[in-house]
Image 1 (cartoon, rainbow, N blue to C red):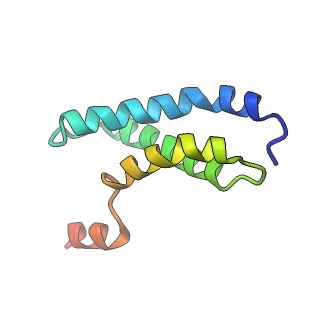
Image 2 (cartoon, rainbow, N blue to C red; image 1 turned 45 degrees about the horizontal axis):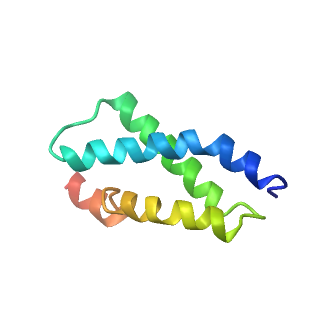
Length: 88
């Protein structure tokens, strides 16, 4: 449970900002291939942000800040069906 919302937001904001920055890079150059380490970092940031959405005690304020960022990510994140068609 999030006890101190201000501390939570202060601690997590750098990760959200980095995730948003990576998304902006992808939008500016969608044809560019990311190095594996950058893909791993992107995945870590994505998982961290989504976990924060489902953390008990989150507030509408925190969700309001994160949900638009997560919607932006979804445009670039392949679904399971996308990945299976890529493998074929």
